[in-house]
Image 1 (cartoon, rainbow, N blue to C red):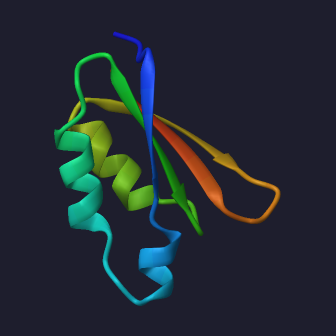
Image 2 (tube, one colour; image 1 turned 180 degrees about the vertical axis):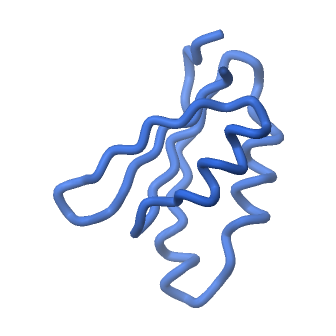
Length: 77
């Protein structure tokens, strides 16, 4: 199913403060409705997270941004 709506989660501030955003990301993903996807903004390519969410049935489309950050769009496979 392709997502019709997207939530955006920018974890750069959390990482800048030295925090660990993994639980926040998992909570956000778990609360997605069937027609929703997630746009995740990170300061680096979140390869381990992409693999983790692929195992949970999501597809990922990462894109590098002009400011050096990464935007990864997660949708249900």
